[in-house]
Image 1 (cartoon, chains in turn blue, brown):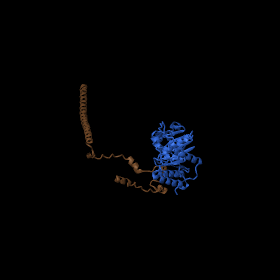
Image 2 (image 1 turned 45 degrees about the vertical axis):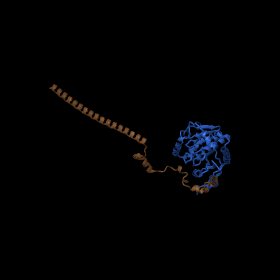
Image 3 (image 1 turned 45 degrees about the horizontal axis):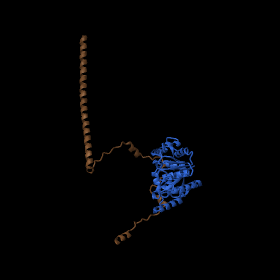
Image 4 (image 1 turned 60 degrees about the horizontal axis):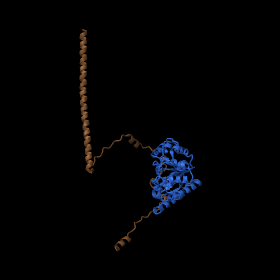
Length: 265
Length: 133
């Protein structure tokens, strides 16, 4: 089972696009993928034009079976959508001792029939996010080409490092995924340089960057995934390369004590 | 023509500001880059907030409107509304006056009726005593 959380504590860095496209690319490769949206803004359902009858809060709080909550987005790709009611989940989780374990067990019950679970989280710090990290144990950090995005990436990584120490369970950062890359801007070079530095310090690889592509917002407007909207777009080409790298990293397995050097003294 | 050419060739490009390289130390030292797991802490006690929540809220009086800042139309509408409210208030006052008058009248009728009943009873008692004698 391949489980992955796509997170960056900064918004607008292509988390949702990455989740959707990665899920679709993996589904096209023959995997059965479940994309879970834990962002109360419910962007995945919106972008793909899905019309779910039940949402994540129904599954987690009201114990509605997962099969009733997921909707199919493509062949081999299902989505567990989010709504504004997802904010209730944090309140419910707050009152539960061992919430991470409970959350993990709930989602483990939904795993049947899937090869990969990809979770999109909100650009904030929430219990839902920590539970998702604890459950998935793998983190992918998309990074936009700006300072705030870099800072959000470091914050996400530090959160994973410290959660690993608290839970005595490694949460592995699969890699940084540079997104919306446009080399015409001088800042891009500086951000990539900083990303390399962070990568070396934390031992987290920088994956194949995703170039800026006008097809991405157009696909969102058309309520389609990038694969369906423009199968020859350069962003999709990059996502395919990144997905291949992610699968290779996944197959290589977790490197032990990855975070040891980065933990605060 | 030569003048125009000169101005075109002499146009200066926008000044580019040098960008300092970003370091991880700088990112980690930035404001807000602490307390990553504070979400896991139990809720902190804030008695002052609890006290405020228990105290009934006092709605602050509306600040006097700056009449000069209103347009003529808005002022006319406000005046019309104010007059309408005045009429309603007048009606309410009148209704209250009428109601209080009616209540006083009813009270008077009631006391008169009670007095009459008592007098009737007294008369009937007197009559029955006389009959017995």
